[in-house]
Image (cartoon, rainbow, N blue to C red; front, side, top):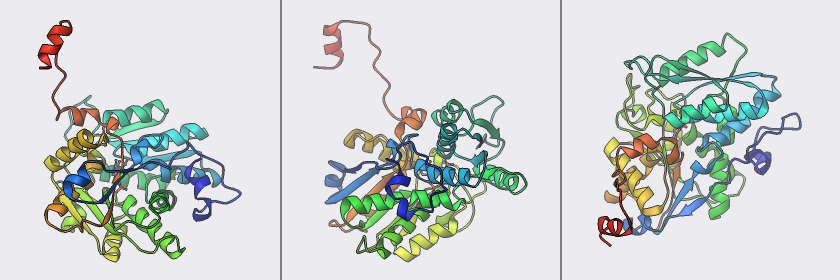
Length: 356
Ligand code: AN7
């Protein structure tokens, strides 16, 4: 079952909305075995969104946005993307037989013929699903500005999270957490890039609370990368830099949604360094068996710091959202682990090398 079928009564769909799904959503809420214990947190969970059909949380919003675009008669879909949105849009376009155009940042100073500034596996997804991919010179913010300009002049449906149907679909992740825990957590910790997801989670928690499905609201805690932290510093970043390419965004479209979520919930949005991100990504994989992409490790890096600073109550229920699979960006990960041992030998030499 996909998110439209599961949460139909909470979504802007009706009898005229076409049925679309890839069985997205219903992702595991994995209880921490080791990190929670090490931090002294009794109730730490990971919402593992990397298990969505295209490997990220984007599928939740995309399925609703595509269904609504079809309902409205659109035949051409477009998005600007740091990678995951484009992979998701391309998949649902393929499934429903409409054209997909993807605009990804190629980077301002990149060498001719070099790959775009997005993770290779995300690019390969968009290409395999059959999208037309344009690597536009400049960063993500310029790509989004250009796509918005184009859609205001041509009959092409804009599928970025400024499309409210994306936010509507993404809020289902908050519903799932409440359905599983029996109430809202105390803290919801997630990465913030274009800020659609924090906006969507907050909307979901508020709606469920208003419907009597939860007795409380979580504090919303957002993590940005230090070189791409406009919401933390309070002004747009012209040239955002971080190895977490998914959140390499300098002027978030849902800026206000993010600050409202933060302020209304009594939460916070803070920046973590790339070094903290890498170390959190490795610790998550090697001590929990959960491989998430760098952007998804940013909230865990922030949680480490908040616990160290004594800002998180040990009895609190904390959910960290792992927004995308580690398989999305193996190049980033491989730079930071020991390479395989090269060996030409038999069992004895193998045992010797392994010091068994
Ligand atoms: C893994 O795909 O912006 O704050 O174009 O891929 O809702 O933008 C991706 C964002 C976090 C940030 N984690 O979410 C895109 C894109 C992962 C992501 C974010 C993204 P938003």
